[in-house]
Image (cartoon, rainbow, N blue to C red; front, side, top):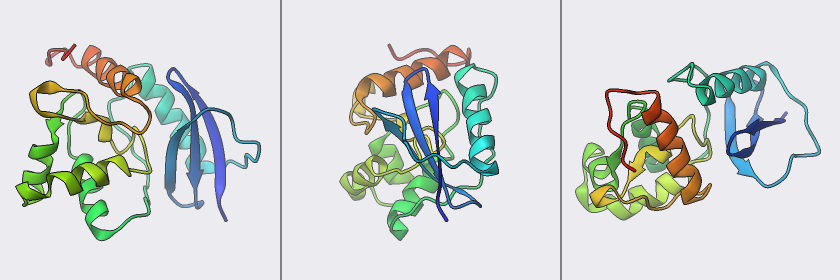
Length: 159
């Protein structure tokens, strides 16, 4: 069974989905879903998102089950290792995965991340600190990075 809920974030509505055991999707939505049937996992997810946006929490402790290819799963697992308030480039991500030539494939997998914010694809930037590509819009990527850097005083802001 699929469960759904929506969360009113400072950056707009987030549509949350779960299979009842894990979070399967978090996406930005222009409107609330009409078929909402929450579950304990989604309630926990909403509490953790609230703590994240308020600056009270820098990490998430949720079971995740994003649907994707083996390569995408490897990319998304690597994204989860990027510390709060820090960024890496697409090239650095490709190198971490063992193949600098896979930079485009890494960018594509990053863009197909189905669990926004919790799997922090917003922490990957272009060369020269350029903000490139974000499924939720570049303005949201900038806002997420600004929020994290504000609550991570050891890091200098990019903007």
